Each structure stands twice: as structure tokens, then as C-alpha cells.
Image (cartoon, rainbow, N blue to C red; front, side, top):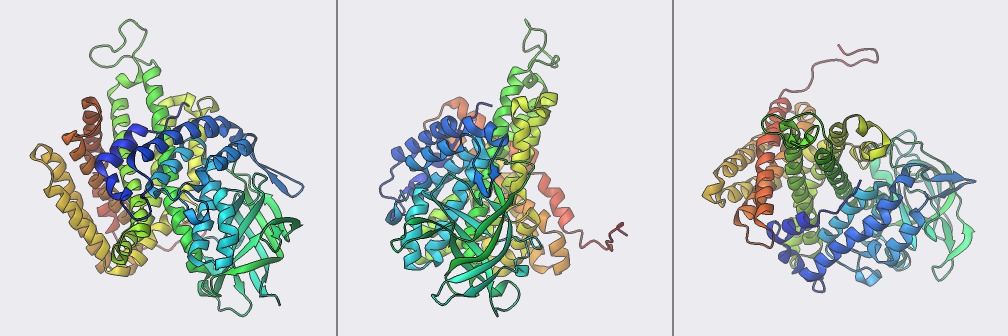
Length: 589
């Protein structure tokens, strides 16, 4: 596959749809003007194509290896990581005080999309580094931040997140890993963790493990959890890495369906020396800082793979000759017409591109909210942006990760039998992206979080605010976009109805319909983003060509006509109520 970061689409989206100027005007971003911003976007494309795409196949096979207790990265990954760090990509959106470049997160979103589109397995190491820094910035001590954050920002050290254990997955309240305080104020951690992404490797000098554990005597359940920080190699008095290894054992790496280049480790801690992050019994709040950042990142992973899949499907549809289309032949001098000549193929590609455009706008809208939550001028504006992002995070994670899987499967289908073999690379996309629907909380977990903690948690205030914004957007559309206006008004009304139902229905019915409600939210937001794209394309006041604007308008209408109607069925299904069956091991009655 010949992946290209969709720079033109990103430029149009940020410059003409999402008001990039407003984001660059936020306090702390004064050093990043628009020319710098888009120069970095161009450099991202060069970096991912020259360094990540070239080792993606080796990441899939042979992948990472465990030898004598040490994990060794897939061939080419170490060289790519060296360039990644030396060129400053790991530090792109991190704080200047710790060596970061402090560039907007919406620019970081482009980096994450490009990395996932070329090499998802490699991209995950960056997600962990970034998340550990975010958690330490929020809850770490001054000493922890001073010692760890510069090393993690540079990429000289790498981070991990240790939550899951063999007997528990999402239910973190079942965690058994224990922590016993030592005389020097440190803690001894003992327990077993599984599914630890990039849990060990040879690409960095040291690793910083964040570990959820329970202090002796702490209450059961999630409220008794604390967060700890343990280095792979011990540090000297000046914070430098020594040769003394902490008591951390890599028990194995998982033989997975995909992302073989990312070593997913089982790790045993045996009286491992660690230091608490924040306060005892407050570990889950600290870890959620990392998890929430990771959930937005997972959505961007799905977006990146979806883009790679659509690019591959589109290229193949133009190259592959197969049958004759109805009407005039597209290739009269050849033995057959290209796949794209067939009406159903064009429908598939146009709908996919419409979903991609709206999905990217939705993702970058979320990224811009993160910028506002961190950088807005007033506490009130920061709080408002954070509240909006909190509601949207489970939707972005679930919808975009599932879109990645749908588009990857669509690419296989477009390739036919060639898609099922390794030669064209699209079957790897299917295997790699599938994990995004699972880790950092499955789609069902995201849906439960949305309806219980987010929508019901604030009485629907944020969601109803979004509905009002959609209706205002519809009122502002020009008369020439009357069809777009009607579709957006209908989407906003549906979202309002469904939100009212979530707030008033019995809990069992709400939880049964939560996944469908999440889909209604996602499709409503996609319609909103499509309307904004349509308005910008209709105006055509930017630097793009007339043909480009016409294409964007066609894609926006395709989303509204061919994808948005799925929300009708989700609205009906969500209100069907809790299933009245008793499930047993042998059958459902």
C-alpha cells in the first residue's frame, strides 16, 4: 500500500471548517503560526512514509520477540524509534518545561493519524509515553515530574500502563496486586499484570511502569486502589539509570491476532520497588487521566487505519479491470472496465469517503476541545471544554475504532480474493485495527460510561447544548443547502429525543440500549460535521480548487443520505427495552 497522510483534507478541515486560527490563538501556542503548523503536517507525512511504513511488514512478521526475559523489538523498529525521538516527534505536544515542543494537540492528532495509518503497532509506544507524562503532570510529585517527565518527553525512557490482571479485565475493583510500604517511604509491589502494551523492549534506556495496586488494609473495590511508579532499572541519586534491575519479570508476550510488532506482555512484580503517584486510594482518578487521553488516541488510531483502508480500496478500484459497467464502457479499448465504473463500487467508495470526512472532523473537533481544556484563557472556558470532551470521549473512541474495522473490512471486500491474502496488505489492517474496539474499554463499556456517568451524570446538560449548537448551525446554512439543513435538523431532533429517553427510562432499558444511543450520538455528530464541511465547500473561499470543493460537498451529502439513516434503526432499537430472557451456559431461553 502507498499510504499518504491526507494533507489536503486536513488543511481544508482545519483551515476552513474548524477555525484553526482560534486554536493557534490560545495562550501557550504563540510560537506556532499557520505556516509552521502546516509545515509540520507535511513533515509528518514524510516521517511516517520513510520510517514507519517501511518496517510495518516486519512488525507483522516476525514481530517482537522474547529471549531470556528480554523483549526485542521487531526489525527496523529500533531505527524508526531513534528517528522518532531525535526528530522530536515524541515531544510534539508535551510541555516546554520538560523538553517538549508544546504544539497544539490538534496537530498531534495529525501525527497520531499518520502513525496509525502506516504502522499501528509502532504508534502504540508513543501513546504510552504521552499518557504516562499526562498522568505524572496531573498527579505526580515535583520530584517525579522533574526526574521522569524530561526522559519520557525525549523518548529516552518509555512508559507503560499496568491495569489488567488474569482474573479481571474492565472490573478494576477486582485487582489483587498489593503494595506494602517500605521504611524509606517507597512501596513493594507484588502481583501479576497481563495485556501490557509495549510492556518491555530494547528501544529505550529505561522503562517507567505505572501500576494500579492495593495498599495493605485498603478497602475493597476500585476506591481502594493506588497508583505507583516503578522503573525497570533503578535510578541513582541524580535520577540517572543504573545497571541494577528492579524485580520485574516478563513472563511472556501474547500471541495475538494483530499488532505483532507491539509486544503485549504478561508481567510479574515481586517486591518491586515503586513510589506512589498522588495519594493512597486515589489511584483510579490518576489512572483515568491516562486512560481518557488513551481513549481519544484510540479513536485516532481507528481513523488512521480507516484512511489507509479507503486509500487502498480506492486505488485498487481504479486499477482492477473487472466486467463491463452499465452504459458506456469506461475502458473501451481494454478487455474490461475498472471496478470503479460499477455503480455499487462508486456508492461504496463515496459513502466511505463521506464517513471519513465527517469522522476526521469529529476527531479533530475532539482534539481541539482538548486544546481548549488545557489552554483556554479563563477557568470557565477550560471547564466548559473539558465537560464537552468528557461527554464525547467514549463516543469518539467507540465510533472511530469501529469505523476503522468497517473500512478495513470494506478494503478486503473491494480487493476480493486478493484482499484475503497478504500481498496487498489490507488483511493486516483488519487484524491490526480489531484491537482498537477492545482495549481502553470495549464499545459496550464506552456506551455504559456515556449514558451513566456522562449524560445522566449532568442531567443531559452538555448533550442538550450540542443539540442547540446543531440547530443553530442548521439555521445558518445557505438556502442552496436546504437538503443539508433538513438532514441536520432531523439529526439534532433525534439526538434530543433519544437523550430525553435516556434521562427518563428505567435503568435496565437504558443500559440495554446504550450502544444504540452511542451510535445515534456518533451519527448525529457526523451529520453536524458533514453540514459544516458542506457549508465550507459551498462557500469555497479557501485555497482549494473548485473540483475539490465539489468533491467535499458530494461526500458530505453521501454521509447524510447513505450513512445518517442508520440512526433511525438505532433509535428504534434502543427503545425496545431490556431483553426478557434468562441466559444460561447451554442456551438462551
